[in-house]
Amino acid sequence: MVRRARFKEPIYQLPEDGYQFITTLKINDTFLLDLEETKIVLKEESNSFLAKHLYRIQKLSSKFYEFRLVHDNNLTDTNAPNYIRINNFGHRKTGWHTHNPVKVRLNSIGELSFENEQEEFLKMQKDYV
Image (cartoon, rainbow, N blue to C red; front, side, top):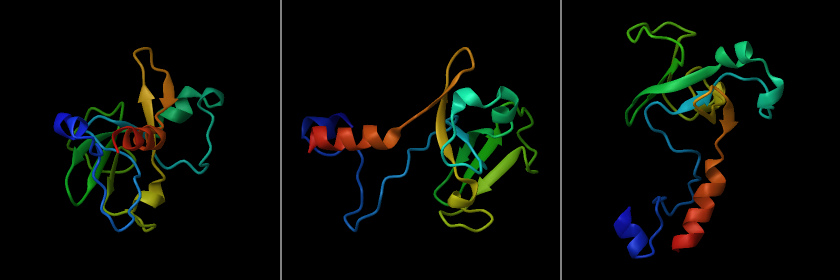
């Protein structure tokens, strides 16, 4: 990443055939999954409601993404709703769009805020290109 910044190259490499940046994924990133509404106001929702939909990334591979409820300590249980495995970016049962993930940040006192990576991504791309 330092080399890319030094040579004014984009930080994230995208294929040239027009793919779109969705989000970055790292282990322990938190997401709200399986929410019906795409526009949710975090301050208006109860903590108990949000806790039922707050997942963290447990495992990542090139073929699938494994999410587990934030408050779940049993790492071997693969039963829903404690565990969700996303296998593709489609609309089927194990698809990204089926679960409608929204990346959020959890601060030290338990407050949630949206993490708008697309704006940051576009800004970083413009800064270095």
